[in-house]
View 1 (cartoon, rainbow over the protein chains, first blue to last red):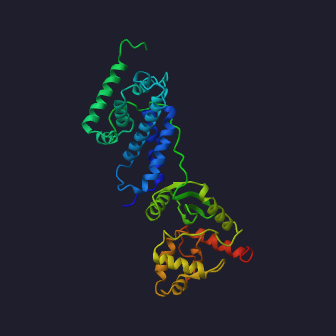
View 2: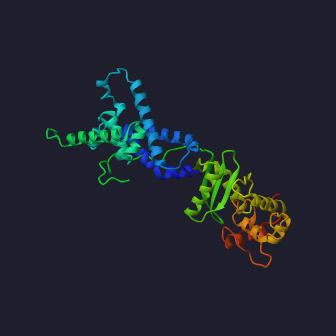
View 3: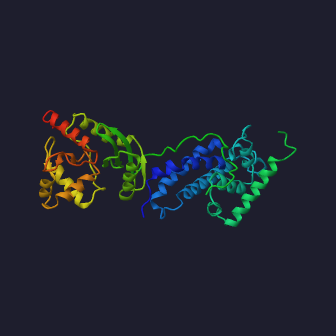
Length: 162
Length: 199
């Protein structure tokens, strides 16, 4: 078995990796996370034993880097209590007036946020989402449908001032 | 798989751009030279694995896949590590040098190709010419003129290892990976600069 030249992966998938990183950590830190994911992927690439699903492999690495980023951000937050975390600027995309949906995705419970972003921004099936999250396809399905239900409620909230 | 409805389609800010990765096991560029579009590929130790004609993107991809299999799959487009070979090739094609002054690595060649290309590099100097049959003789395979032609036709180090100096005994310029016009151009270049370049 021989792997395709790494440049092909970059050319074909850099947009997906960048988009996924944006969905998981927000636009401010997305470039760092994507860059880190590519660096790790390049280092690990020759040891890869299969050439199937290289895209899922890249997106799983991106997810792991995003989780490391969140962990790092939590550690550097002075008051490590959940209520302040929700507002900490480094844990999600900063609110953008025109990006209502992203703001709502950012404040989903982390597992739901990751699942819905992997599923729809990464366009991964539930098996791949589950592999990235270290869970089962059934749980991935549930996390995604819970996330979508929350988003739907939010977006149709009649009390919403919009 | 693409879901029927994509909730995030077209949403989100602009993407920054492709990642910036450092040079790795193999760096390459595609260069428009005086004799045609060529793929130049260099290992991390500076040795050159390909100066190969690549007229279209499919040809580029075929070479890259071969390099990924034979050297390393860590292959990235990077101009800087290929600067030296690009400059040497330019000097040669402008008649300022009588050889492409790089350290070649024949990792992409077969064992027979290595024999043929090695014999060629040792025997046929700047401005000289030989025939497929004479080269076959020289590598101890007098009846293998055709195989020698095939070995030269897939030379991964065109111009660097001067397969353009090998011609059919019957006349004409014969085949060439870069096309007959490129071969004629190189032969004329060498004929014009013979003795004029510094040895």
